Image 1 (spheres, rainbow, N blue to C red):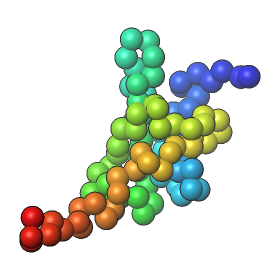
Image 2: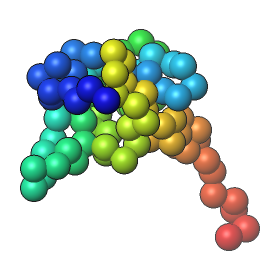
Image 3: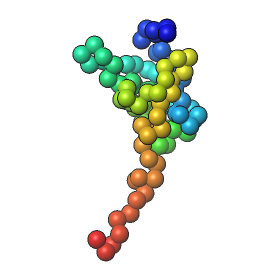
Image 4: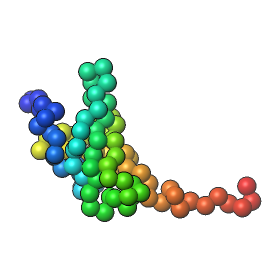
Length: 91
């Protein structure tokens, strides 16, 4: 098993486990000498899902694989339909 340096993964492409392009690694967040999360500059059609933000922070627990590309769990993404949910009037 080859261990990667953090400097080697900056700029790597990020894909969801569904195969969708998400963005590129911009920075790592460390806490107590452990990786806490990854700052990702979003790209493609994902920008609309994150409300036009230029980047997001994905907790490391959602990273499935680190190699030539990053794979993240699709559950880490915001649900685009969640803002469209309506509360029933009878509640």
